[in-house]
Image (cartoon, rainbow, N blue to C red; front, side, top):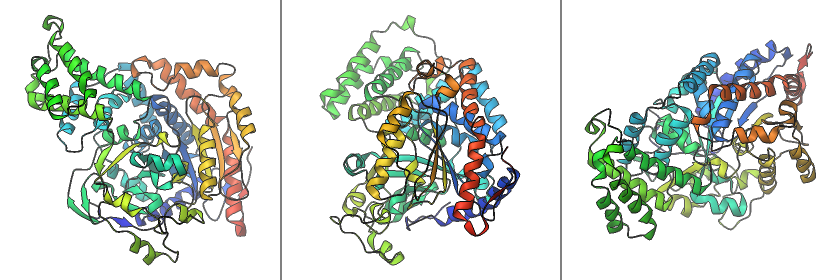
Length: 554
């Protein structure tokens, strides 16, 4: 179990510092195998963008090929948004065994199996929680079906290989949806939220809680009620909750609810469906609830002869009342469009004094403009205390709603990364993440390569497989569009259509999966020499006393 107190410390948490330090030894060994001699290990981060199931499969392909080429062992951080988080988390649940992971992926999409009964059971169980939201439904009934997985392990289970330094330090991105106005207006860094095997919290504020206590109830910085650690299935749903537009997701959720009854798993619920719909009016009274009443009334008109017989007694999966409570809660959450509800561990927490005690920087007032990257990120105490500490709940959602790749989590002042390998699995413009990050960094005076808009527009018309971006200071960024002219020729649009973000897993046959894996691997393999060259360059740039030396790159 982790600490039962909230940690408010600017910079890296001590557990991460220790893990990264141990990782350095493994990175140096990996560089030596790659024939790059260095006295100190540069900090390299691999970023995976969002993109639903496409990103999940492509990111697995990238990780697999990087492992095969000896490159993954030279990486300090792995960070992902949305679909890439599903792939990155799988790496750790399989102890870094990419061969087994790839074989399991192919097996899952060969058999096309999904355990509906178990997923439903998990969802009904989640609905009994006071903080149930659409994220629970999305995680157990949608993402589990998309990935054909229902992992019950936890982030804290990943600690061993991370602390030993045998695998990179993973970072999983989300954003605080309640702070979206601040993001839209000023690209506020405190909007970003992160998960690691050790902690969960706001990196720009230096405010974290132990990952084992994420979701537990805190007040004034103290744990007041413990809740079980959320499993990876739920977290994958939280990280990947922006797979399509609002209307598409809403329609999908409604269809899923309707199908549960039509498939006969809860036939006896049909007889009471109409009264449940009216119960929603009695308690909510909002006209937006009419969709659920109408849907439930339609269920009552469904011929029982057309319904499949249940394979198991519904009582074994939970009581009828629990099922109806689940339907009711899901309907209410859908009408309110409530996602990612969890207890706010900063509730009633006074934070300013902690910052002042640990830094020599002046505490920002609410109206003071930031003068540096560190101040704009809030590490001096420039947290909006009233906003952060007055909310009883947070609403955490897919970070792709801000920037579809986790650049803000590996850039200063949070972390000092020397080389970033950015794998973009986005639909549409593969440089939108670069545009958004450039804007974010410009606003907050964070070093990041500057690229002219006209040049980005030109690149986006016929993207190549690799772009190397460098500035006077800050990290070197290597950007890899998934669909590019080097690998796809003139068929980029056809590839993109085949792997549309919201395409259901049922359309992903084994051949479709294998083809996408091969494409992602090729992008790594064809650019290995460029990656090695930049590894050598950053090793020499950041440690000039004993510059990195390469025996041969050929």
